[in-house]
Length: 119
Image (cartoon, rainbow, N blue to C red; front, side):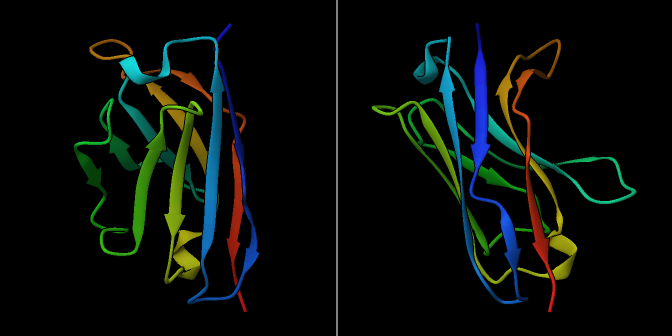
């Protein structure tokens, strides 16, 4: 059974930082591209970042580029998202997702962790 469990969300002030983690099990973690996606209040899903099997290539949405860093620890089957210089518009539920391309694009999701950026 594939399991993805996000943690690390919370309430932070603008300009603050959070480190999100996604603990995984039930699949060979280092065989897959992994991604972070988010859903802000009243909005659809937005892709945030992806990382290849060994961390050699990372990609970011323009909205977070330069502020967020994705990484993975294959020894611990864990995906990380370091978020710095947080803005109110980063407020969203953040999900860890396993790549399932070509169809579906993502085939497994975590339960999500809430990130709220507010004064």
